[in-house]
Image 1: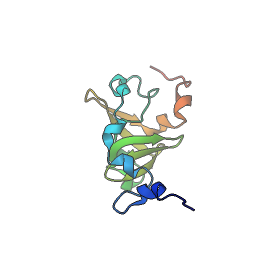
Image 2: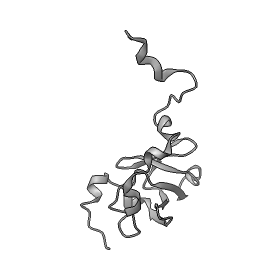
Image 3: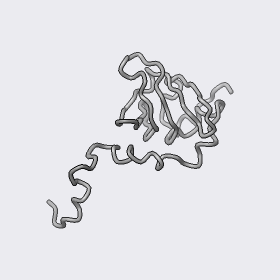
Image 4: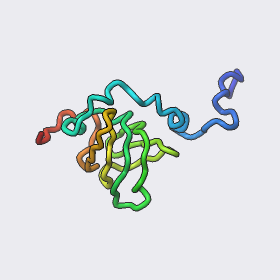
Length: 126
């Protein structure tokens, strides 16, 4: 129950009501200082949130072509905001990330499965 009308301001007509839609309209929020440090060698250990991503191959044909900025990352999914907000499973896709320098890095999604903080502890061949 609302006691104060000020609490209901975000529910006005014409504003996005879905989860992540408000952020998706403002992609400048996602561009952090860390984007320039991502390289082909360290992307597996790096933070993916804020990078521009595109699904180039997937086992499900509707997932191919999804592109936008990574909003959130869980153990098995990436939330990508483009023209709408998508939740993409990591293990069935191949992703292309764009760095701040303009480099395009292709990564198999199965390599990214796992919590982001636990990926740092994994040993990968460099």
